[in-house]
Length: 294
Image (cartoon, rainbow, N blue to C red; front, side, top):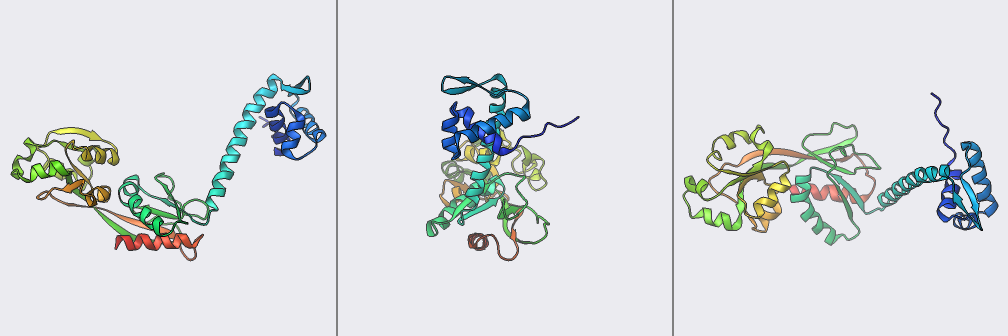
């Protein structure tokens, strides 16, 4: 099957401007070319497609059915191109540092801290991505990646920098009520909210079979951030990542319940390109991350 030859972008842009304005003269003004040049581009495009795209109406033009079909396709393509160019322009900002990492760590640990870094360096513009596919570091996509294992990509500097743990927490008022109650009576005074994967995760499964088994399950979530929000609303006690809960613990909105096990969690790695990165800001943020974890 022969593929349709795509006309040149120059012809398509002339057509798009004429279709949008309904007038060759105004299209010419926008493109900074002559009206005859726009007319010639449209004629050449019509010849390549084999269909008339405009009909004359008074001093202007209107699209034929074929022109309307083509305009919709060209407009979508032009919008995609403009969006892509806009993203490139944004990335060329020397203060931009693109960081990819897990949503829980960016939400609970990184976001509050990086605001403090920005306060001391207003030129810094962090771009935080939780896209699970955005793990390949290069000069035009991701500057720094945070992951639960080395990326094993050549030419990277990779450092283990954060050790997480699973802790049992409760909203401050609930934690204070439980503090005055014998430990074995907690299930009569609080419910359990949890992650679905906690029942099967190697580190936490035994905890739910033993220490947390007497608690009535009030709600089960598939996203750690939903679990955090419910815990902050006082819906029950929860087994949660300490790094996710970091800001809430510092603000005393959550408290770690004494007497419950604390279980070792993941080790998080931070990576960037070896040698000189795209900008000095990348080095600054990378070194700052290491210092924050110390």
